[in-house]
Image (cartoon, rainbow, N blue to C red; front, side, top):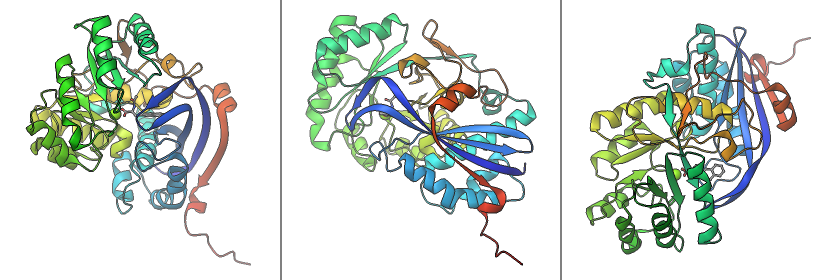
Amino acid sequence: MKIDCVELLRLDMPLVTPFRTSFGTQTRRDVLLVRVVADGAEGWGECVALADPLYSSEYTEAAHRALVDQLLPRLLALPDVTAASVAPALAAVHGHRMSKAALETAVLDAQLRSAGMPLAEYLGAVQPSVSSGVSVGIHDSIPELLDAVDGYLDAGYARIKLKIEPGWDIEPVAAVRDRFGDQTLLQVDANAAYSRNDLRTLRVLDRFDLLLIEQPLPEEDIAGHAHLAAAGLQTPICLDESITSAAVAHQAITTGACRIVNIKPGRVGGYLEARRIHDVCAAAGVPVWAGGMLETGIGRAANLALAALPNFTLPSDIAGSDRYFRQDLTDPFTVVDGRIDVPAGRGIGVTPIPEVLAELTVRRETVRRAEARAAPVPST
Ligand code: NPQ
Ligand code: MG
């Protein structure tokens, strides 16, 4: 394809309820969308970076700049672009995986819309719907947490994930087990809030038959996770922040750092690398599940396609639209009997609702082919 222009859109979306994790409380979503126009087709990608660099080093404003200053000039210099050519064209730029992922996804969406193929089919999906779990933030009190979990179980979610941090771990997990029983699928996510010295606390969590404990230690400390496992932590360790590529996933698995992998396409540079991680894990007998970054319907649609691959055997962090937004950007995704349907349309299968997009958009920037190259000296 020949890319005509790329549009970056910034949206400000209020969350239905504040979302507190070990790194802070979020009340709004600062969204960056990438829209690619190529050969008359359009494609959409959502950048999952947060407004501040608290989950990872990337953040929305930096992602926007990286796209305009570094990534788009490299991509638009190519005469012919396919999704497979995006990562190689951007490989010289270190990091910035969330920006790269958004751009690659938009190109892939445009390509698949032109070809008339759903993303799920392209990726190798084997299920028409995906098991939906919900991520439950840190609350001010145990009764408030139990009310929230009660509501999500009523809504049909197949699994509960509790966000934890030192001081909010054993008590909330014990309270949820006590109130909702041993049959509830339950796991925890620390977002790197613990240290190797916290083995004693983490071992207490072993008593609660958790599906997994997600990213207890810092992103860089992959060896520390292997150390925890070797020191006798029984609950499977799942890595999220640490897994930045298929090569890192392979290393983490072979060194005993994790027995389960959370896959977020944004974190690893796109859906093509995400599929490679799926394959590496499948070959090693390591189950995977789809993470979530409070995406709008645009990011959620693509995540659903990936989560329908065969080795996604644990419930996803892909919740219904109403978990996070009163008004989603696309037709809302809904949980029915604990599952969400994978979009069946071409490409990612959804587009923004024009009126909603117009209402939520706070900034837009268009980069055209000629502008993306070094500006030519005007001739007289
Ligand atoms: C995780 N997500 O698995 C992330 C991290 C996360 C669903 O738990 C605003 C936007 C706040 C995205 C907080 C879930 C967020 C965010 C946490 C993502 O670690
Ligand atoms: Mg996580």
